[in-house]
Image 1 (tube, helix red, strand yellow):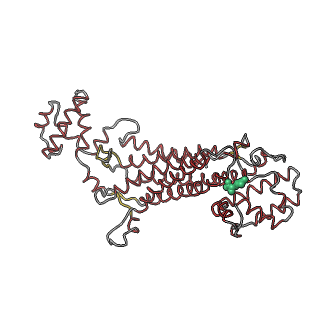
Image 2: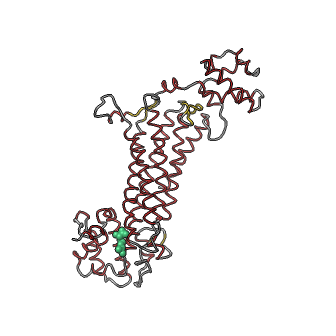
Length: 443
Ligand code: ARG
């Protein structure tokens, strides 16, 4: 076999479309039967033979999954099989198979996201009341409920899944019946194909349909955002579980040590999650570049969509699952969190205190900035500064200033919808549970 044969073929990578190819071929045979190309006997023999064509039949000598299935069918059925490709093109087959496969995968991933969201809610409820220093610029900023922090991932995943299901609308459009690109001279009933293959609609334009791969890009984009978010939380968990923080711990770290340093318990899985996000951005980018500039309609360049599609989707699924499984093992170290909460996280609460006593924001901010400078310079935490000293900064300070300095009173000061006030966080968790219940009803 020439090197061109090897260069041209895609069978090693498009084998994942095998089941979809069989399903689409079965539906197409039915349409040919209806069109009078196949008689009942021929249709039945094709149907029977398609059931038996297995992927492990070593189809390696064929160019692609479509040639493999067709040729194995002809070997089994002879003349009947030779009619199956009447009015059909691999250009429409590949686009159809990819959509069939992708629809299934989107449902699987969507279920996995829901599972992850369930774990998030469980953790938020179990650890309700734990308060961590929240971060901006990776510097301690303000106290927040840990549940509030972890619930932020719930809503990101909710939008991630919504985007994915939005993309599904574009995936769920059937190309079969479009021929090579101009349509078919055989009266193929495309509505019959739509029903057989459980698509929501048939494509409106045969040229559009065989030339489109944006449906893959759209799914990869939706998935890339999900992985982008997971990679950021993975990074948080790596930091929060380091010796320097010790806020959280995952028992599974013990499984990933160092071959040289006996004491190590590493966050390998989160590091890999971080890297997998990079990988999916690569698949997305590579497909953009493959498609860019290819003339309308089908071009062989498009065969190179298989790795981004298969690997991108599988990577996303495995990453979401690994993240979920790690999250199930999360343990919180309340004492360490309490110990590491620096007193400066209350500076905004002091500003609010002065505003409550009648000072305007700008003056309150400037006053507390000076207070912070003094406290850092003299190394005296807020709760150890005397009232006399406080009064040097502003006469508005009273004894009740000392009530500010606890994580609990800080979070309770928040009033806005969606804030870290325990009542709002509880409200948020209830709402999330409602969201999960509603999706369950829909599935
Ligand atoms: N293996 C090809 C692909 O993946 C199928 C379509 C080939 N069509 C053609 N006319 N050569 O895109």
